[in-house]
Length: 328
Image 1: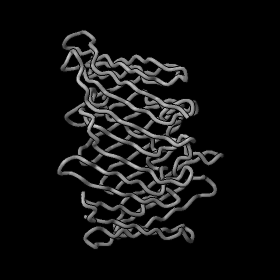
Image 2: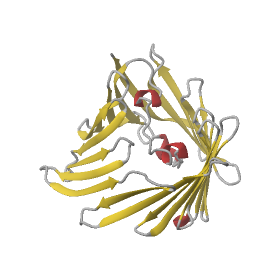
Image 3: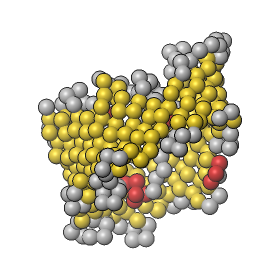
Image 4: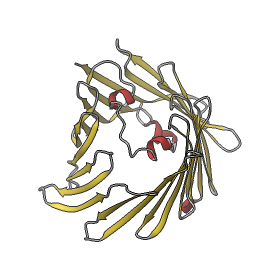
């Protein structure tokens, strides 16, 4: 809801995007900041921007297992009609399959994804409302061998076409720099340099693509992370800064025809309390401030967003989110 208001484009930290080949062991409940043995969270959203009495927009129900791992998600429309349902099949913290069913009229589909032990997608399948298979994509990974380490994957697309990806990886023992080069169907796709500290944690990396796009990332000594992403097709630069707790502090999007600076603030519990947009001259364009009401476990049960716009110079209630949290 805040993202729609401010149109903020956030770069996921490269530690999640690029190093995401290894699945996270932290539970999803912990990642989103839930405290205590949460069993389920029912969230209802109300929009006040165009209706002073408030207009329900949607709702969601998230279910966790006793360890905090995500088990199921339900999405409902404004009338309470089920829109989609996702099931997570897992072995402890590893997800090996997800199944999402959409119940929207004329769009009834079931989308299935399968993963290997490294969290890599090995297959996708799409079925229509009657259970008929529409398309299937499979990917087979070969073990890493040799020096440099070479790994290959073959993806079979729904039309039977086979695409091959080859990854070559080397690590310089003296500098600790890892280089990973990826080719797709015989053509260079990307080149990635990674510098790690003595504990093996990435501190700088540079990922460059054949079309000129790139992602650069650096972790400062104080834990602050700075990133620079360039998307060649639109000539768009995105600069992002995050603190040591992985809270995004600032994002700048700049292209030949547009510029937006977005800043973020948080409370002591790590909850987002403000998003503000500025133009290139530094003029404040929009600001959303957020207030929370929490339960006895410290989880918020009501979130109110207030939108300030330069045109009116006033802050108005824009949306309210309410949560019903059940515990084990």
